[in-house]
Image 1: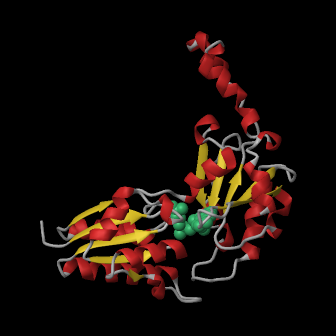
Image 2 (image 1 turned 120 degrees about the vertical axis):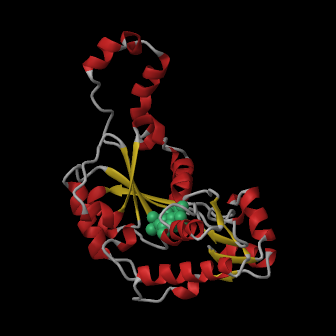
Image 3 (image 1 turned 90 degrees about the vertical axis):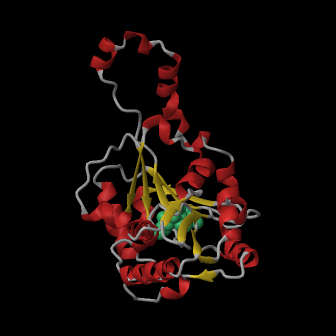
Length: 285
Ligand SMILES: C[S@@+](CC[C@H](N)C(=O)[O-])C[C@H]1O[C@@H](n2cnc3c(N)ncnc32)[C@H](O)[C@@H]1O
């Protein structure tokens, strides 16, 4: 192995969500780079004097891919200098973070030791805050532009999570949300769900003292949804799917099994009136 190494870590959305392992790597690296929320930035810069933000590579209307490759070049140049480098990205560093995967692949190709450590993602926070369980009826997760640009066969009877709804069809970095894109996404969803189907625009908290935000609305009102910061869309399943009679032939005991009864109960999990009382608090906050 060559001298020089790379560890990519996820920080979650605020310092209390950082894992002990990630925090150790940030403290002990010879060079730290980061893309982080404000409280995490404060924690990182206080923990390692070499820490440098990668946010300077973003620019309004600048092509996002150009920015990502500049980040890769910056991180890799420190690795090539033989340093023990740690790059920290908010949330999970491998979820919708192009430079992290390119850096790991490049470093390994060039003979450097490289690893990625997980972090708490927006989806993890959503599961906890909104009170949905991806294991009950399944869960599909798409990036919004990807979801619109490729004809998708997806299952309305499973949960649907759509990322980057504020920037549908936007290939340059832009601070302002793209309402036209959100309207087109809504039109696509309306081909599959009724207009009154309740959906949730979700914002994880970036401060442990402040509640997350979840805005529930009929799907038809999604184009007017509040889009502060970077929300994620949660579309609950329509209803439990119809069971396959062939299944009972092969597994006759399933009809009475506890786990299957539990499965049939899951429709209730998604009823708004049974959702966590935190939702009320969050919407009022
Ligand atoms: C570039 S991706 C980064 C995802 C991040 N790596 C993660 O693991 O959550 C940006 C997208 O993550 C989601 N996201 C970022 N911050 C969020 C927040 N505070 N609440 C909910 N979703 C968020 C949004 O879908 C946003 O468009």
